[in-house]
Amino acid sequence: MPDFAQSPEAPRFPNRAIRLTFEYEGVTVRLVAQRRLAMVVPRSHAIAGYEGQSGFWFEARDASGRVLYRRIAQNPIRFDVEVFPGTPDGAMRRQSVRNPRGSFDLVIPDLADARTVALVSSPMGPDASLEPAKEFASFDLGGADQRGPDAEVKP
Image (cartoon, rainbow, N blue to C red; front, side, top):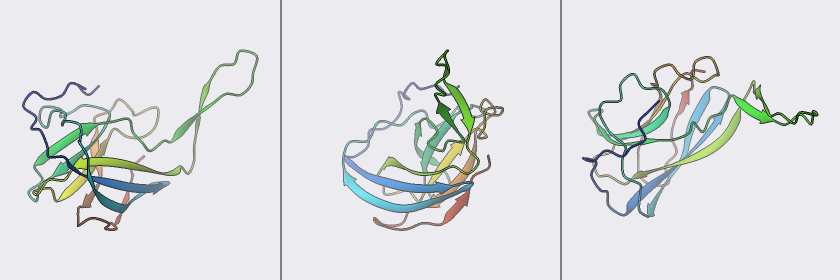
């Protein structure tokens, strides 16, 4: 499990941010919008020493691929849902979703050196969620209000 503690050496960022809006359907993720904002962004989690960890996080990277900002989060892409079947025991169960779809937003600091945002996750599915996380999508950061390419998610 990733360490949720903030890195003591993590720099503080300016009060400028970029809201990234993604849409997904099945195994395709698209960056559909970027918008610059005036807001305080949470400090970065550790940007080194997490190799082999499981979970989900996103990273802002410079042109050489160096991580500038990393934030651990709950995976916004769900291949299962909670179902309350109305049975006498009232127990919640998880049910697989064959073709998940939806949208989500992520916020990163507006850093002059940031060129890409990467989405990193353990394989999606109940049997692989503890496996080491790997990058599954990366998108170029253009200017505000840009549209981006599609990327395929590996479930």
